Length: 535
Image (cartoon, rainbow, N blue to C red; front, side, top):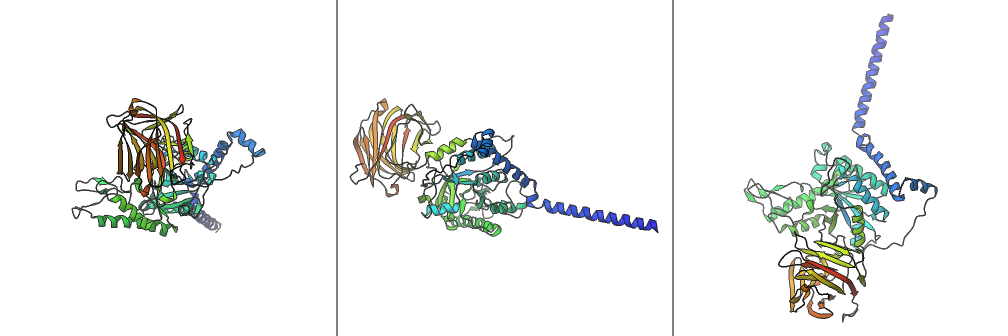
């Protein structure tokens, strides 16, 4: 009887131990499937503490200074705040925390990203939300001068787990544009590259992230002809294999309209959040089409029907910041491993609004940017030189975009060229009014959307290619423009109403051979405040 009781006790103990083990295994499995018990989440909490320490060290110039700051904290300096006239938007893709990663043109290392964000924060820059930006474009909200938007494309895990701790430390917010058939599709939970639905929900809950649309199938290539060639989803007409024909314009419009709408609905329905904007995949809204040039206007028109705001990439000849008038199609500055923290701070500073009257002796770069070719500021001069690839050089002045009625004078000397231009009302290289100077004529030229609509020419012997010093000038006042050489008005004309304002720039090229170069000194722009053109 005693042996029987002992056996029963052993059996009961074995059953109890087995039950405890099963409960433990079940609990472990539950925790394993819980977002907050996964290794990446714990790693992110450690990274947050590490970023807190690194920023404190960066902000105070070293560990010893950081430790001293606890004993004798410096008073916070409150500067008089100016208001923003334009908003820059930064674009990132992957932020890579891997010592074996090799730099490329798309991604950036975590160390470089950290340095960029720390530098912006230390220089007083603060992120704003998309809602802030939309109100700003409508004139319904005033924003601080040092405001910017931080965006990431593709919904990648390596631009969330590495970035989120830095956002928390700096109290920054960011926008993630997601590809919904990858992040919110039926297999999203198995994704190893793109963020899953659960991760996106946690991002929204953090308060530092907003989730926006990067299309549904827009990153998938489509067949564009009978030969099987591939092209971008949005900007090309699709080859319909079963019908052995290319889709019609109406079929193309219907296909992209559906994709734009469905990606928005996917986010709003599955993440229970509103969607304000769409980012064009590859920055392409018709510019790189293979078979459908008309797609450029069509894609933007269709996006406008679904979203209040869309994002493209700024080209090198664009003013890179966004003004209220470009409210729907906002430009982003693409950041890669070739761009330093100081480059970004300089770019932001260069594009702060400049006021007339404005003078530049070129002792340092106060905001001149290269739209093409190369520029160099040295010894009191601005030098433009073309590139082998482009055959021309363009320089324009950041922060001058809002100038309207003004005159410009500059002293120049040709190193090598047969053609140069002084440009006013500059929006980009395709939209401006220019005074073109050659050895045998001076011409007033107007460009609207890449089309030359005005060319008023006066045959004048300038002898500029000989290398002589000369003063060139341009005056824009209302709908009138004039070109000057050595203080004398040579050509006059009327400006199109679409160019009611814009910045200043220079261009140099040679119609016969490459290697053109131009030296500019003593630049002066003065506001015109009366109808007769007096300053």
